[in-house]
Length: 247
Image (cartoon, rainbow, N blue to C red; front, side):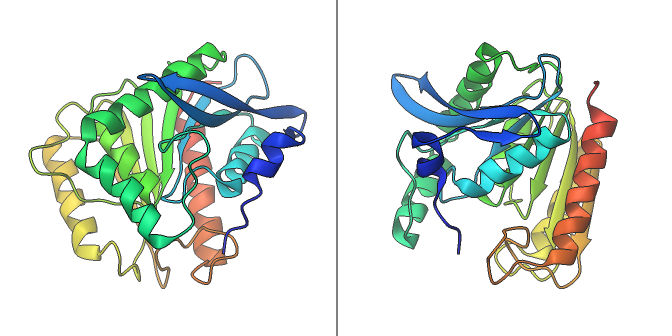
């Protein structure tokens, strides 16, 4: 189970990652308030846009953002649900993700709004990669299909299905998919379908499966957490960042 200390972090002290101080960022998209998290070790740091799972922006994403800041990256962990909206039960999580899955234009607008907010904080969005976990992984692929001018898109145990009527013809950056082969929520058939689609579209991509890893295999404290797959996928992701982004 995740421990929801994010609100506590925002209300008490800023988090620190090797000299970089993380802060809450309230920003607006189409008249609604959203609450993200920004951390940057330097003004010229390469940038990572981080997209949360279906329980909203929590301590998990903050921890991952801090881990990336330790490696020299600026990170904006966005908010897709709205300030103060952090669903804790299954029904609410399905409601919030379902609404965005049905309204892809809104999902894209929220990600664009987050990039604008990050740029306003000084992030180098022209030297950027987007990464997402679970539902956030599906959102990252939506961003890739939108034609967003990012250098790369990475997913950890993310949704892989392409919505009807969409394709990867506008995708600009390369794609990294990290998936558990024991994932019953997102099947290996979906994994294979995406591989065929990306190959057909001529999109540079790398797709990795981790044996025995279930859905959410990177989430600390979860029963499905698998340390080997988590460490291996994180290592590959950091290599992907180093290869993709300019320092």
